[in-house]
Amino acid sequence: MLAAAFTISFAHAQDVYPNKPIRIIVPYAAGGGVDIVTRLVGQKMGDLLKQVVIVDNRPGAGTNIGMGAAAKADPDGYTLLTASNTLASNGALYKNMSFDPEKDLVPVGSIGYAPLVVVVPQASSFKTLRDLVAYGKANPGKLTYGSAGNGSSGHLASELLQAESGIDALHVPYKGGAPAINDLLGDRISFMSINPLEVISHIQAGKLRPLAVMDAQPTQLLPSVPTVNSLGLPGSSATVWWGLVAPKGMPQDIVGKLNGALRQALADPAVVKRMSEMGATVTPGSAADFGAFVRKETAKWTKVIKAANIQPD
Image (cartoon, rainbow, N blue to C red; front, side, top):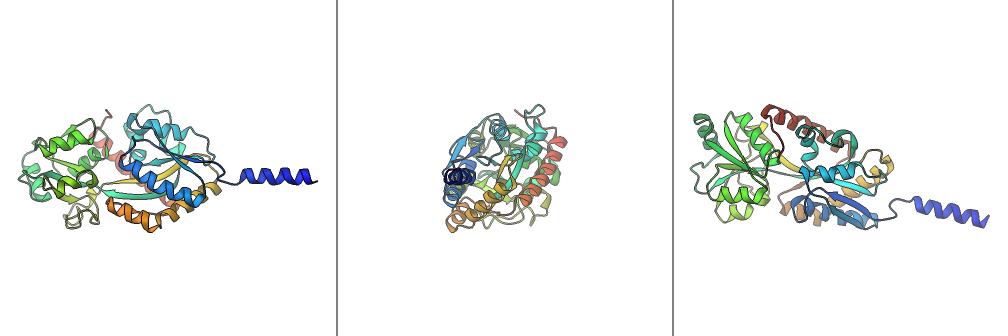
């Protein structure tokens, strides 16, 4: 009887989740915005769950390497993925993926978002977004904009801006954000739609001029910059966002436990402060809330991708 009781007790202890380290896959290289957000939130979640949280960087193929690894992992709660905009856009961009982002990954919870900002070189004659739009309408094809590559968040946001404002600009894709920013600084392209955290130092140094925040609300990094809503272009809203997802089939009680830890982490004043310093707003909510958000974003960006016939690099 004692032996049986010990066996039952041991088996129950083994079933308690989590009882080993949790891995969060980041489909980007270390040091970028998604990596920083994951480490910030992951460490706090680990403290709450009393387990080590390991960040596993799996960059490449437009985030499909990391997303694919997560989609094919065991749905036992020990492998998660920090998803971002590509979760909503890659299904329309890539035709022969080895997984289905909508079916093979399930929501755990939202982390937060940061609005993109339209910026021009300081030497530009455009002082406002209205100036840029007026020139673009009067001179079709003469505006140029840069991005980190075909299908990137900046590319899609600029295509959305064109569609909503009625301008016609030429896309110049780069191999990453840094060379695009360098050409913007050199006044070799007209504008960019970009995460303000990537260019805030250049804005503060007076080398780049922000024209508009691509959201309904101002960003804390640039509180005096007008929003696209205030400028009459509410349909041009574009953000970078993050959330946790897991392989399909993960038990709902584990989803619930992870969602609870994530929401507690996002309520921590230190986490909120650091996210605010990055120009980001935390958006805690249920797994269902995040799932609905991703579906809405997927519909939005699929429409943009198809209308502009965007092809991946």
